[in-house]
Length: 191
Picture 1 (tube, helix red, strand yellow):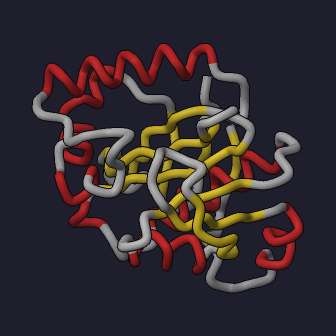
Picture 2 (cartoon, rainbow, N blue to C red):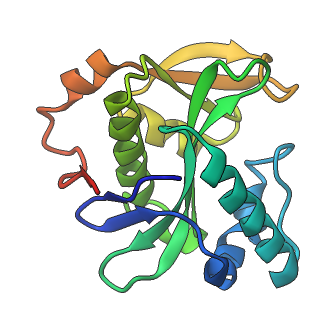
């Protein structure tokens, strides 16, 4: 089961079925899911969202940390604003990907970077030696987010998902190098 992670503005916690309506606001948005294809299509309705959440919850129960899926909840008002994950990449499930998805009206407010940083810290606390972000070449915003959070471009590859993607990598030493920066999301702690 995914461990709860807390930052100054966010709570990353396990998904619950009662999150379905808020999750549909995120995963029912073509603006969000266009970047997730071919892995995930736009969720069409509340019934489909509940089924998907059940699947994610069941997978999370069996996952060995640091692997997991998290609901991103804003602490100030308890609003569910998105989701995040640390998942093995196919084929072979040897590489671990950090991913995030936030409601479009909340883009460019630093939530994705804050969630990403919390997951990265969580993974490195579990002796992961490198993390990857897989970004579609035309997803300028995601590429900017991963670069702003210290991930380095590792090149283009067609190894994952049957399409050419940009690959970004982060290692524990990179995180150590970033720690003194004043613009890192403050207040991370695992609970």
